[in-house]
Amino acid sequence: MTRSKVGFPGSPKVLYSSSTPDSRAALGIERSVAEVSRYLLSVSETLRVHAPGRVNLIGEHTDYTGGLVFPMAINRGITLSYTAADGVVELTSDGVPGVLSISLPFDSAPNAVEPHWGSYIAAMAAELRATQGLRGHVLSDIPAGAGLSSSAALECAIGLALGFDGTPLELSQAAQRAEHRATGVPTGIMDQLSIAAGVAGHATLIDCHGLSVTPHAVPRDIDVVVRFIAHRTLEGSGYGDRVAECKRAEDEIGPLRLATLDDVERISEDIIRRRARHVVNENQRVHDFAAALGIGDYVEAGRLITEGHASLRDDFDVSTARMDAAVDGIVATPGVFGARMTGGGFGGCIVAICQPGALADGWIVSPSAGARRID
Image (cartoon, rainbow, N blue to C red; front, side):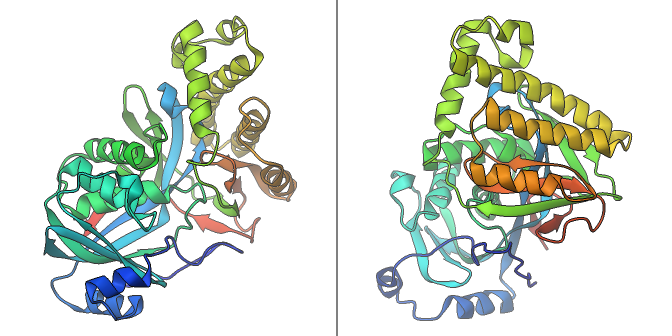
């Protein structure tokens, strides 16, 4: 199986960088990454797993308060080709020389693993207490830091490759814990669950408190377009601060998933009140967006998406001037119903819904099946 690489204008060519030449020498590996990949794809013992990226249509910064989100797994993702190995994980990454190598069982600090992307591999191996390893090659067409959940896709892919055989929910929970280990950022479960439980042709309405996943068909007479704007990392952003601010709001008025705007107005501190207002309004927008999409009211669905961006900008303070300008330009384009930043913020991507062909600059993405083994 081969996969074509498709990039955003100005986006990175590869998902991850690899380790230093010293690592390669220590392992006695002199072949290029391309040669390793060709070898793996040619031998009958090679196994494959695929995990899609995801784009969140609406419902941002609501998952870690048990709120509602509306993501979809997309037709871009990570494919891992590998063979079994005893007691070690050795991986190469497309387009860059070098090898990630960790010994199993892994019981060290994953954030100390080099190269940096190996921290997600190590954290997932630790979560699964894996002892049976693999040698393989990572091929991706998701830019890292684009807000399309490349790290969650990698966690789900390596989990399957290491032999995880539980439910999609259980896989997503293990991957979420691995993300926390690797980054120290208290992310919600949306990314991992939308990737593990994706349904072809559908977005998923996820209740992040009850962990229910309800598929909603994505209409075929609209385009979902993703445009890369700027790289970002959650570790270096204010994501953790937003989680803490929402916790402060909940300490004052109770669970935000149950709160009303009247409750929010009782919060004394302005910045905490604004954070809570975004979450309460965004949960309602998810409800309304699902209803509008279901009846084909794309004008209303687009209005809700764009309104959500304004809330992320003004109440949640996770947008940037560059992201705001991009949204304004896209929304002003004829045939576009609405657009907003997607992902944790502070950079990343814009998602838009529009009439077919209205936006030429970006990816037209389609809803994909979730993480899976490939026969």
